[in-house]
Length: 95
Image 1 (spheres, one colour):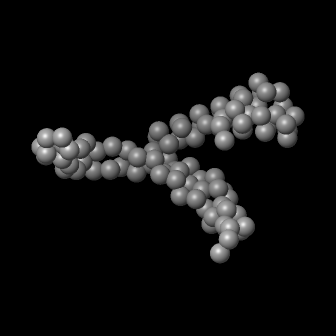
Image 2 (cartoon, rainbow, N blue to C red):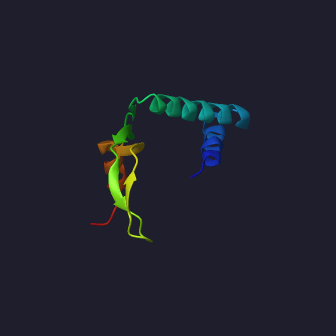
C-alpha cells in the first residue's frame, strides 16, 4: 500500500476531494515525523508504537580488507505492533 492508496481510500470512504485527502495524509505524516525527530514516542492506539532509540558506537570490520573500524552511533526508528493488531493479523491464519 502506498501513500497514494491511502489518499484514494480516504477520498472514497469519507468523500473529501483528493486534494483534501492528500493534505490530511501529508499533515499526519509530517506530524509523526516531527514528533519522532524531537525524540518523542508516537503511539497509535490499536496499531502500535514508533520509538526512536540511540545506538552506541561499536567496533566492526571492513569485509574487503579485514581492517577494524568504528561504526558511529546513530538514532534508529523501531515499530512495535499492538496486541490488537497482532490478533487481527493472526485471526484467519492457519494453525
